Length: 253
Picture 1 (cartoon, helix red, strand yellow):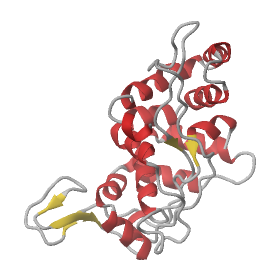
Picture 2 (cartoon, rainbow, N blue to C red; picture 1 turned 90 degrees about the vertical axis):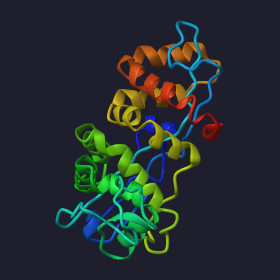
Picture 3 (tube, one colour; picture 1 turned 90 degrees about the horizontal axis):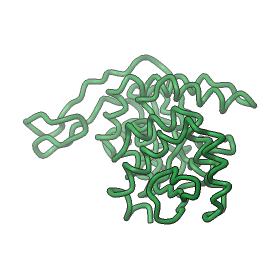
Picture 4 (cartoon, helix red, strand yellow; picture 1 turned 45 degrees about the horizontal axis):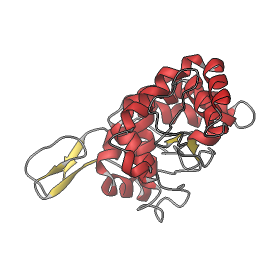
């Protein structure tokens, strides 16, 4: 991952949800850093003026994903219930699940029906998997991943949540699964998907966070230099921090 990702992004991210609903889901390490949160004092905004401090609570994740095979059937079915509900919700005594095939996909669909269906029924999520699967290895890989996220921003959080869920209860069925999301990361993506999508789709937002993460907590001169170098990242990163500062405070402490 680029240097900016090392502080902001975690290693276990979107891997290969191969074929989405219609084949095995294989989650691999997205290659990000082991970062999570930078605590920078009591200020909740990214830019606190010339002498302000930054606080980055709430992890984020990035990586690549692949999707092979034909487009999935995104219909849902209720098992054991007689009434319908929202995607991923419950119905009667059963659970709404989206169609899947293969042991890994079947496990994720049943263990994490809400996040699985969230991705399956989100065209950008499936397109993101397909786009990143085509990224070449080598020095162009990270730029390609960033381009995919910028092209399909609305699928980022759904893809992260689906992949993070697959890595824990389905580790036996998905042997190449990465690490599960931390409670902080899960809260951040679940609570603030729009803000996270906007930030992760913006390379300046990632670069700003990485820059701030490399500064000392009270190194205000370093912080200001980051703001000056990455002005286009200030607003989207501030939106993430504002969104997560309340609902995810306990998870991210």
